[in-house]
Image 1 (tube, one colour):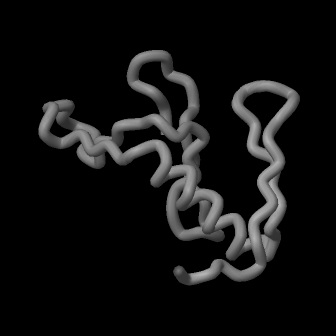
Image 2: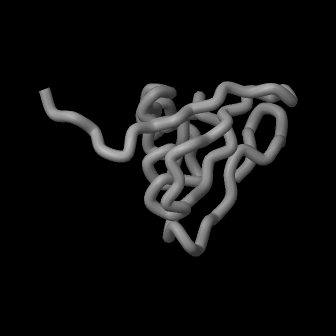
Image 3: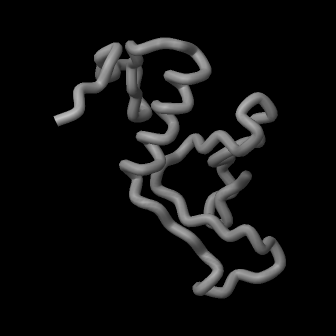
Length: 87
């Protein structure tokens, strides 16, 4: 999956997840590769994409600690509880 503006790779097919792995959270996607009309582009909030990626990683790796990077060597340590409480 390439950016139509800069041709950088922003995602790739992930056979183990039976879907696509996005390398960028702020994207608009068009599933029709022959037409670029505005009404065919779909966007989702960045938070929804990052949350879906974290949940998939938790399920696949059975891990609860992650380091989230934003294009730099240092990152933010995310330590999730084993069980979410319902309030």
